[in-house]
Image (cartoon, rainbow, N blue to C red; front, side, top):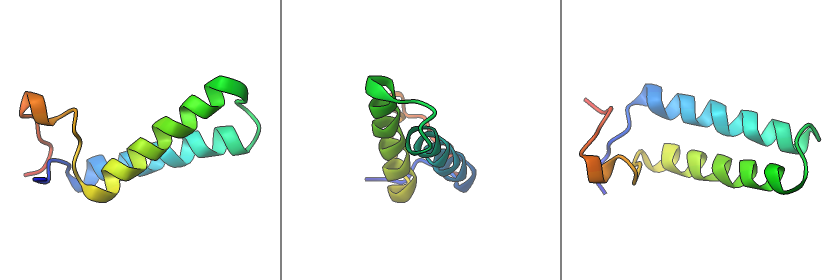
Length: 65
């Protein structure tokens, strides 16, 4: 996998993942919506760690310089 995320993009993804986790584990969002938000947060965190977004690849989009 070729890196396609800049450091800024990665930081934003980590912050969003933390926010979604807080909403669920803080009891603010519960039920099915809460679980969906946690899954989205896990995906955001994973893509930030590996610095690759599979949705960017088909469009040949990259925030990495």
